[in-house]
Length: 169
Image (cartoon, rainbow, N blue to C red; front, side, top):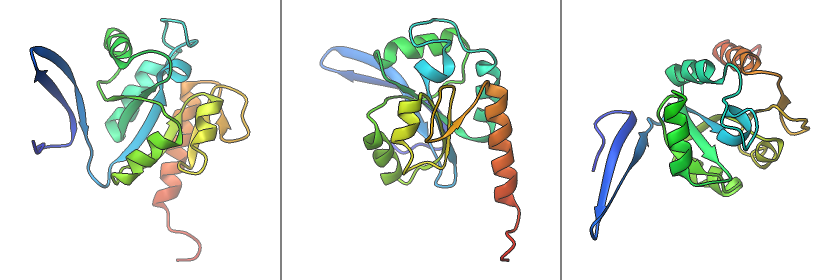
């Protein structure tokens, strides 16, 4: 199967009488990808079912500019896919977080990891792989933020600086 466009593509898999559905995220080599940990960044707390304030509309805005990939730590992707859909987050792939191995697999496929938003532990594991790291927890390996608006401000500021010529040019 060769996708005809970038973005999300619904897929259905059938094997030996079983059927399952999922999302295939197709990215172009120039697409910026933002990884977002569900439990610590989108939810008020890991065991809560309530979205963190402003998370839905900021992630929706980010998804217009970048590709979003969700990460999960605790439970299966199927549970989180249902929660994301119920809470009206943008549709995208959900990957099980396996530390730096997850990042190595993605970058090994040529995916540009632009930012990660997650727990202090998660962004610490991403330190060598992703420059833009944000968390709602105390950290020394990224930037601690108070809310999603602050994340959006930092990402816009970074994008504006990236578009400016450097003093050396």
